[in-house]
Amino acid sequence: MSTNRLTLYHYPLCPFSRKVRIALFEKGVPYTLILEKPWERRIDFLKMNPAGEVPVLVDEDGSIIASHTAIVEYINETRVGLDLFGDTPLIRAEVRRLASWFDTLFYREVYETLVMEKLAGQIQSGKEPNSTFIRIGRMNLKRHLRYIEWLMERRNYLAGNKISLADFSAAAHVSVLDYLGEVSWEEYPETKAWYARMKSRPSFQSLLNDRIAGMIPPNAYSDLDF
Image (cartoon, rainbow, N blue to C red; front, side, top):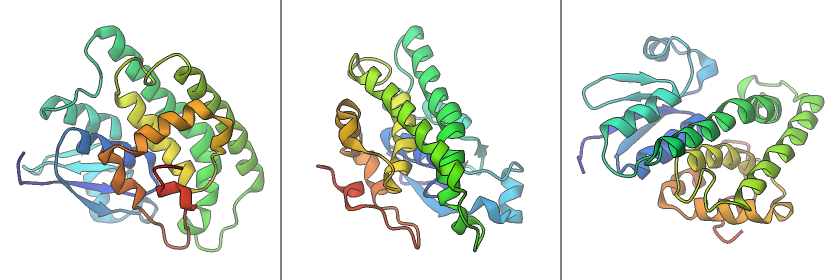
């Protein structure tokens, strides 16, 4: 494995940043993390990604790859190791479907309503969270957790018999909600067992060490035997 490192601009509670961090580790790629608060709209960061969104990856040769989907595809195509998408066209289609489910639907229905409101004070000092949005986000979260439960009653991993980007995408999103103490794990035993396996992977350990000033996660967040 090369001693040269890639650079990843990220925000700790951004699920897309978390997904890319997991993917890099699973592919055996060393990298350096740089904290970026996208709401600050830093000029040098906007030059790398005019969309102003994390994550952004800078490769060893200085190439810049923005958008979590593009980064994961790039990593998978340019680095050896675990194939993040599976080994047949049908499996790859299912992996992409489920990754899109969490990156699009879960993000819109849970992250943008529940998490963003809980982060309101971090993003805009003094802003109070909207309790209506939080309530809607919690309702949506339960529906998505029931879907994971349904999948895990029928499969070894979300997309089939092998771990894949579908699991990494889902776990990245769920981990943010877990950090905020929003998951009632005892209501979802199959989901809990799946997430325990995800938390136990070495690629997950740096995520479990993340801390946001003024927002302390519950003790179970970093407990592998939660």
